Image (cartoon, rainbow, N blue to C red; front, side, top):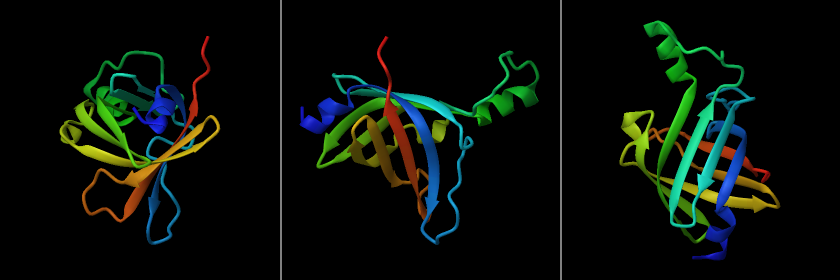
Length: 141
């Protein structure tokens, strides 16, 4: 296991998730600028990420419209990861969005102390934008 892979192991809390456009337009925040989330990397090569819009109601959605809204306010996937040359590759095995199953995402790693920035191509093929996800190492109990 590389030194970079060892540093990733553990839990990280979301600071921001943005879509950055190549044409210079302002970034978008798919779940809002105050989105919440966790990503966890295990020593044996598994990754799991869950993100959600902040301020969601604490009640279970009962109508179909409320269920659809709850789905639109979350994003999660899990699978395996591998680190090579300062890049982490996530091989998605399960996801809230079934279109992502089987995708292998590329995320360039930037580490600054307890802050981890993952950036790379968007999931949408041919999109003229990149994803930029900033995490801070989760504090242990």
